[in-house]
Image 1 (cartoon, rainbow over the protein chains, first blue to last red):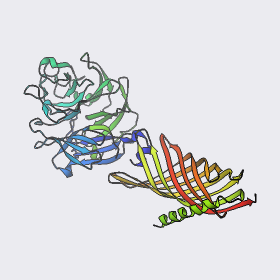
Image 2: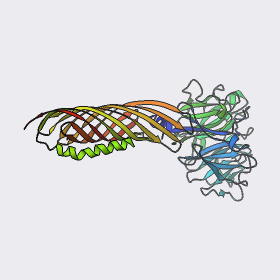
Image 3: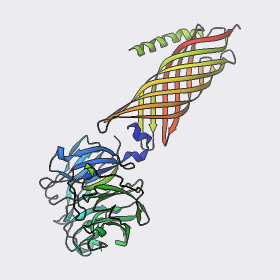
Image 4: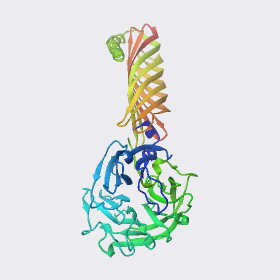
Length: 327
Length: 195
């Protein structure tokens, strides 16, 4: 690898991969996305390289989520009403091909993607969550998507599953952004949703005007959920204790609130090696990425400015992921 | 091509040099100056990172051999090197100009010499990648190691050397290792006494 990567040590081999695409920030005014996937240095926030520019490669396509496939490649969830799919791309941008193309499964607006430990992929298509196994075959619950119309405490209607996360035992945690009382966080069985009993837990957003936009499980065990809103006071991040065994979502605590720093948060990710939390702000006057550190249930901002300031690659960030990069 | 011709000339002098080392004159002290060519393998290894540079380097060495017996003694020398090394990846190319100066202290037993070294290495690295702009950076560190060499005197006027050296050091949290295999040739000015 290049000398600069070696002498800076392991930390510099981790890059923040950012997808600027069709994002959701809780209803805030958004900028026009650049439809790119790019990479930034997690320590300095410096731009590292452009992975793929869909505006040039395939106009009309919009990257809305990224996940790590292996040490050299990543998966991109591509939103395009006439051709939703998952692409597999070399992290240095040198190669791109279609990984999954299933118009029956990917029949609605794609928003989030999560990788399970068995190699399967969960994809939020707003009104449901689809699952593909490691052989790229669609996994149904009966005749329905893997998680479809979860009832009970999970939600009374399902229209906008903004994010999906997996717990260690593959139970599915998701955020649902719809008008109260359906602005909720839900926990679904690892086997998907087929009956009300598969809704293991659900909890409402802390405020009626707060819409959950992203969820991440921190290495400390805390689960962080970001909320966006056109109401300034409802833009914040909460921490929860989610028990994968007792099936509970408890201890809702405001982890960070300052609408001049977190506004229209559209994506969150964590560097598992350092515990750093990255939050993307999609409000059109922001387009920034903030760095936070979690201590207990509280997030602190170590910098006096955003880690990554507004630029063409940070407009309307739909997904982010910290990954190893070894060119 | 010229470098390979130089290597062939040095290799060609070794048999004659070895015959001359069996002379009955007893050596006391000898000053020498040599020039040569070496192959270098320079590694920077972190916990999850590895950069490897390879290439040819030129060497200049000046030293003193203090004889303590008929063919044993102590060697003290200063070695300077300069060369161009390359680290090549699938998406990038790095060319580094390497400069070093090393102090050496060892023992020689007839033609065999062994000893330790301590020196300073400086690298100017030019990086070219398809994913980023051209960059140039300078790094430097101290290295410590040892050497093993075969030395041959030619007519009490010239000295040929084949030397294998290993040096290691640290650059932050990264371990630096260098292995060199070199051939040197030069003039010798010694004080000889008759047995």
